[in-house]
Length: 396
Ligand code: AMP
Ligand code: MG
Image 1 (cartoon, rainbow, N blue to C red):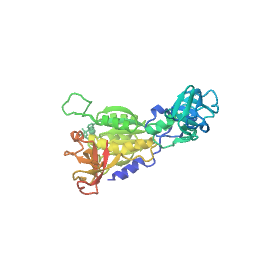
Image 2 (cartoon, rainbow, N blue to C red):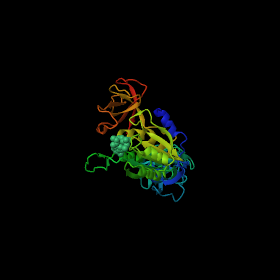
Image 3 (cartoon, rainbow, N blue to C red):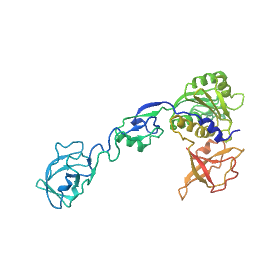
Image 4 (spheres, rainbow, N blue to C red):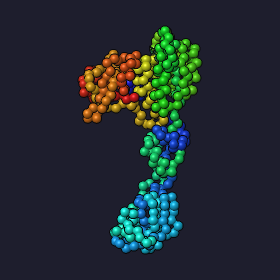
């Protein structure tokens, strides 16, 4: 059986970002840039006042010497004429300063009287002026290819006059849930049946990872129906099938993959929960078979599928969403597989995230999920980890 790292390398190796598309900057948060996004303007776009006050010629300013008030410029306006020597023009913060002016006398340091304004002191040229292009010049790349459009970058691009950006398109993920025992969300209980949760989790996790999900619903454990659903689902970039990848008489998913010409890359990984995970490809479509236990679905999706979805969107270095933390109680892997333990997560006194595994552990222990904020990882080779040991944590 291969390790998690070997399996993840097999999933991610050679994955090229999907093609680009142009989207409104308003819809681009979290997307990855496909073509350089450059400033359309100089910033500031013109010489602007940084203060409410008076545009002046610095050379004219001396303590108590009045300057004649000539016109004014509000934000959004441009000066009608050049500022003549010996005069001052009232300006608002952000307004374009008139030609000829080279300093701003802020209101707090000025005495206005009888159509004149006198400074308290002489001003140096450039005082409180924001000069054209001092921040950014037109054509400067603000978001290079491969960068994620975080909120700071979105704000910078909006200020730079950019209305549209070229980003990698979202992966189209098709979802098939298998199991004749499954009841829909909130349905009344029935003998022998259980409530479906994997489909919901895949939709939520896939949405968070940026995929567009097409949900084919629940398919009963039937060979022909499974083959037909898989064939349809292979039309996307990624196909995820929940359940039915083990070797029971009602597990039709692997035969269906084979019937549809999906080539197996691996089946079974040293991960707990999630050992029977299956991965293959048909053409450019990535195909995942997830074990049906709800905790296996969450762990396997987070470890293998979410990073693949982010790489398809252009994030070169996407990996599982692990962060460093510390155990509060001893923990260890079991069955020789790297084990993901449901855990409550709280920041310790020093700010390090502390993980406390829940008492109940098991791929079917969905109640324990309700007491947890994520999973703490006990590596297969590490033996028993003592309380206080540094660990990786999968946050959800
Ligand atoms: P399977 O991988 O199909 O053998 O399923 C393994 C276990 O997970 C069985 O106990 C199933 O009843 C359960 N299971 C399968 N699919 C789902 C699902 N969509 N939601 C909740 N439990 C499931
Ligand atoms: Mg099943």
